[in-house]
Image (tube, rainbow, N blue to C red):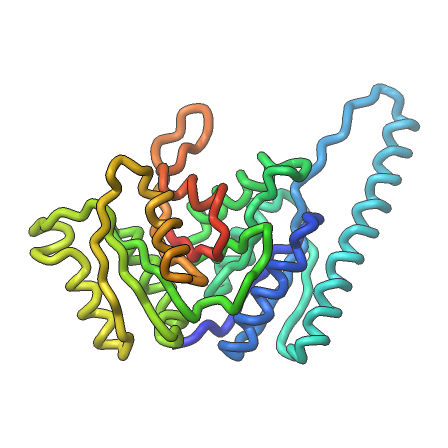
Amino acid sequence: MTYRTILLHLDDAADAGRRTDAAIQLATAHDAHLTALYAPPRLYQQWLPEAGMRTEILARQKAEDDARAKAALESFEAAAAKAGLTRHETRRAEGDPREQLGLHGRYADLIVVGQADPNAPGTRESASIVEDLILSCGRPVLLVPYIGLLQQVGRRILVAWDASREAARAVADAMPMLERADSVRVVSVDAKPSANGHGQMPGADLALYLARHGIDVEVAHVGSSGVAVGDVLLNQASDHDADMIVMGCYGHARLRELVLGGATRTMLRTTPVPVLMAH
């Protein structure tokens, strides 16, 4: 199994080059076609009653947008050329980045996005775009930390397993990387045997499934001891030097805004290693 088409989300964030490096690395490893889509968060202009002033401001804003798009796409082209990546293309989205990423993402096997930098302007909007994409695109999304890559992605993978539909979807979507990994560690937190869930031995059924794909798996059951599940998983990733986490993404009811499950929210905000999520 392999990825044939990878979609990279580009914007004006300072860390865009880091996710570009990850996408190029994966495209090279899987001999995939890489599409870089420039889709920055939308900027809202103050309403002005004077038509002439409004026209002037919009024209200036368009020129600035064009310059930023040109710089971002040229930077991607330079990185692709340096890496010797020939199968790639660039696109510039017009309109809401959520809609455009979802539209283009339907025709990709994997979408690469960046984690929102908490110290950067527009953090809330950038994080919201990523969250909405994961829950609506129907494709696996690889979240690259804003601090960048410390090593190659997908050599030592930690699978967060709770026997849910979302976790099963994430494992299936990550199969091209799981099959190429040097080690795969399945971690269940506070797992309890259940006829309708984990089975008699939590993680054993998943290990057997992966073994039939030729994947050597280690299974671990970990107690949380009152620590948040997301933090337990991050501690496990650190302790075992994992360079990627695979997990299901959980969405709950909408009231005024979308509220994600606790472990998902922890990963989106604080993970120092790439996370492949599926919903």
